[in-house]
Image (cartoon, helix red, strand yellow):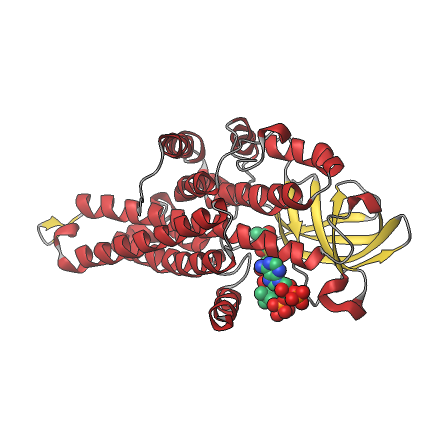
Length: 380
Ligand code: CAA
């Protein structure tokens, strides 16, 4: 078993680390405070090839593997999870879905611009009354021959106002249950498509989260992804890959908090010595380091399964479940190690703690991951 990274993967990891230090760290506290979207930073990430990392270069992507993508997500998330979620949604939920299941015309029209970061995309599944229970969609896409008429509301949509392209999951035939659901490409500015208010969030405050309203929006049939009724499977398959990105984000948040806590514990003195010399602190660091390494192995395993063409539904769910738990526990401990300083914004760990929480909620809550895992292991 070889756990080493290739030369190329190490280079990409370093590029992401440098970018995070030089371009994301300055202003991260201010963006979080002001709920300011990292517009300039997203543009630069597009130039670095981070917005369409796994997309074939013929569609403007970087043609890299999922492990490289996870490495980038980890490095960006150590500093700024609000910026990394933009990368995650654009790469895994929008570009991947379009490349895997879109028509050639859809790829030419949308993917080529999404993969370069010229525009960004959003994935619209959750609704006010259907988050985890994804088959209970209330949004409807009624078949009118050569087009659909879309009506309904989507909630908590990442990149809600900044996206230009929205992949919307909607019910066409309720009688058919999940087989009556379609995925449609909706463009910003289509008549009847309104962007609702921005959410005022606990964490990832620099990211742009909105509700969306669709009132009789006319969507041409050529904007449907895949065959009629494929929308639910499209969403499930896309989310399986998305969960690798969020697991890597959780890993990065945990690793970022751990690195800050370790550094602080070697500088801060109490009772005549650096606090790292007190076993109470050293043992916390030992637990954090061990858990982060275990999470990292699960994330790399899931990414590797995807790269090798294996089934990654189980490994991505396990990686997300565990890494998000580690992110939450590690960031709480990082704040504790910082003591009073941990509670103020200048030391970054309180932000990482707030950012960690969403990784246990979006792209399938921890409880949903346990459904996916238990169903998978009990099927054997
Ligand atoms: N790949 C392909 N097909 C899949 C699949 C997968 N990973 N998972 C399920 N399916 C198929 C099943 O095989 C089944 O098809 P057949 O009937 O043909 O066999 C069909 O889909 C229905 O599956 P289930 O009966 O398992 O469906 P369910 O209603 O019990 O739900 C669930 C399963 C796993 C709980 C699912 O509803 C789920 O994942 N829910 C969570 C949704 C979620 O993650 N939401 C997050 C919102 S997106 C977001 O957060 C984005 C953001 O902006 C950051």
